[in-house]
Length: 310
Image 1 (cartoon, rainbow, N blue to C red):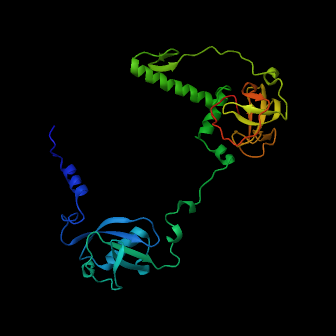
Image 2: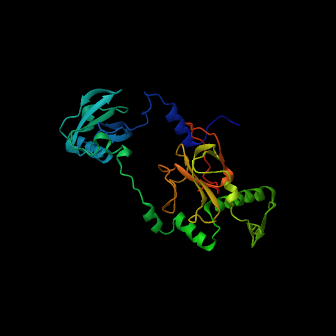
Image 3: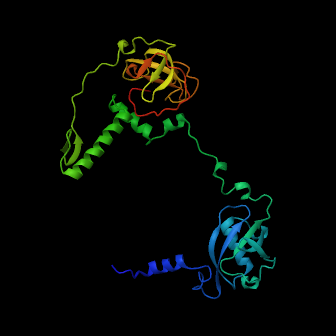
């Protein structure tokens, strides 16, 4: 393969990148300059703006106004080279830029004289000053077309529906499609229905929810360790909770660290006081072990997709 570059765009790019400071602007018209514009209140730097030497200071100020928001009457302009002030642009706005011997590569620095400038103190750039919009759970519940609204409709049609279950089924379908595209064969558990790869329907097993035996030996006040994540805490509740669909027995745990999913409430009803958001959780007994588990300062990884915890 030849090492000669034939693409004109690539040639221009190579010329620009490899150009030295001395000849970087050699292809500009003799009356055209490229300068940077900076501002006293802004971090942003407007680089290589083109001007004609016959343009007036008034035109320069109007362009700076559009770029920075500072009106011409509040602009004090300085000429810099290499970061050092070498001159000042006077108040006569009828003078042309060429009068000040401005050259390509130099910088025009604008000092904002407005004591009430909106750009001061990060007014245009500090995003922490922007008021963030927050929606309450009540307002979110009223909105249509949201994930929560969709999940409610799915739950109404299928009482056993859950977002966790849906996510697992969707992940399995994506993987099945990948296998089909790779091998040309539908993986076990999937078949084509009306030309679409679909998971085979399984006969629903009539498995009763966990009973009292699942929480045997657990009592309020026990220290415990919860999986996944080996999270530690104190048992605050043992028993059934009618507000949780599916029934069965649950263990309410107040964690030592904010690694839970609740504050000890279910659908607005307080089952126990966890002491703060994410300090509590309701876990199936199979994932709880009681014993001598002292408190420790560790944040362990939590998988929020676990169906045995609320």
